[in-house]
Length: 252
Image (cartoon, rainbow, N blue to C red; front, side):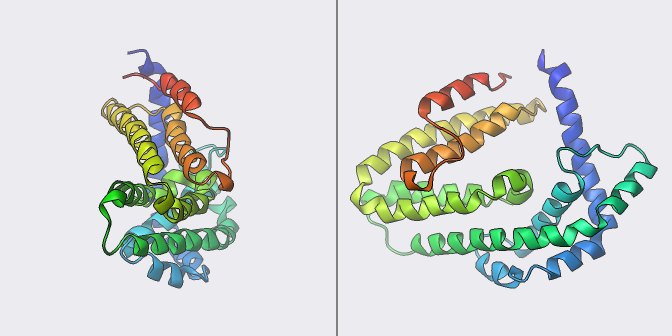
């Protein structure tokens, strides 16, 4: 039970941010709509997102991302009363549009590459490649799960194009390395299952653990190091480092 004293503030902070995001989205609906209209590539992005994400989920996620990054970033002190809430509204009034313009090309690139991958996954599949393609399909779905932008935040969203380029490279190399791909897929599936199991336990016990979140992104970087080393990783990554981090993930 030792995690209660340590983890409860993190959980309280998480819930508080969720509530504030909802509240700010209502208060700033006009400004958010205006910011979306300033995203010159958004029309194309919406088209590219067809079959990958529902339109309302894309819009929801973009708006929540704007709020969490512009108004409720990690360094900001969360408002505790009406005065500080109004001050927060005022303070960042001019920041939404520049932020929308900054994320516009990133989001566009994500869906452009993802749509290309999605097209490659259609059609006849030879038996020897079936396992790799099933893993790629799941991987893409996981990367694009509803709310992915807000939960990644700018810190990780900016790396998303590289994660999708890794999948492109993997598909390109697949015919020549089917056996190697299979071995890596099995290793990655085991890591992902460990993550999913622990995440489920943390969710049940209402635990927020930064180490588990780091473990998730480390798996992503590990994929890059296996399938597309030439793209480079954000930090050094290996199965040994993954094991070490997994041991640091809070047991529940």
